[in-house]
Length: 362
Image (cartoon, rainbow, N blue to C red; front, side, top):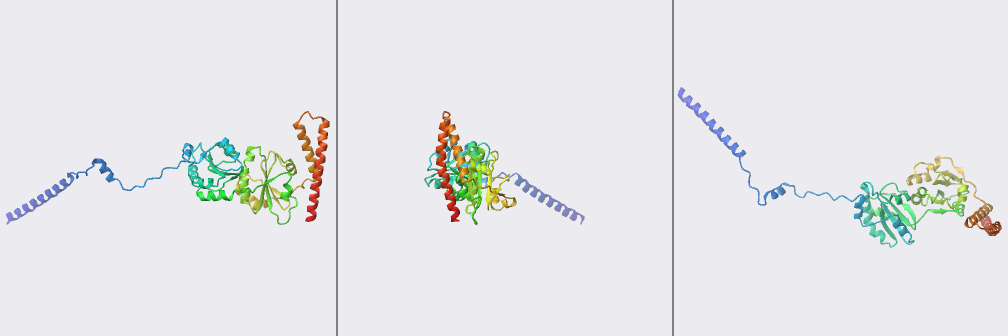
């Protein structure tokens, strides 16, 4: 009996040992198994098969600055070339400004948008599109940020104050800003145009820039001022006075040569000087529409009389005569003054007569 149990136990141990060896054999075979041979084509084909299929590749970067701008078809110009184009009075000019010295991430994308409408713009036959990174030219137009766009219409610039995300938007802007809307005011027409001293009821206000055309930093505001004029069109008249050739207006409003440019709003017989530090389109428009009311207005000085006009004309003609020829004798100058005085006296009489007729008509 005991022998039977001993034999049975031995069989159980033997069966367990055999089963364990089988499991060990299977595990070892799996670990030592040789991987299947690669398909024909060698390792190169195997590497391709391991890569994901149809991986999208990023678009090539847009040229954004420096020499990469040369990849575009719009002509590059410098100051001399711009002057040459503007000498053709039948041509308008669109100038795209970019920064060629430092990285300008937006310049390449903006120029791409202009490239899309280049053919449409030049198809008009009277508009040429160019680009430049000439900082001297940029300063002349008051350009301090890039990219920027200036539209020269018969040598009259206007600054584009929108973005460059949509080429069609830029094209619409160019088409809608072909007309010059800023008034050129002078000693002779200032009061006739503006009626600043005693405006009629319901007349639009006037916003006037007094600037020195010979001073680049002062003259640079002309392009932005034209943009202001378009923003205020139909709401406020916008004009400009070149102080280098209009002394009478300078003296009338007691303008200082050191403060250039000077901006004055004329509203119902009073004048409000723009004294804000910010000199951008949005600030000017806000002042002309509402903000001027926050300050105290001053009565507009009375315009010069016909006799005062006569005196100033005589004085200026005499000074011009002396400057033109140092050999004129006192008698010669005196004779010239008499002739000029007689001519201007007749002119003064006509001005006085027109003023009287205008007063009777009102």
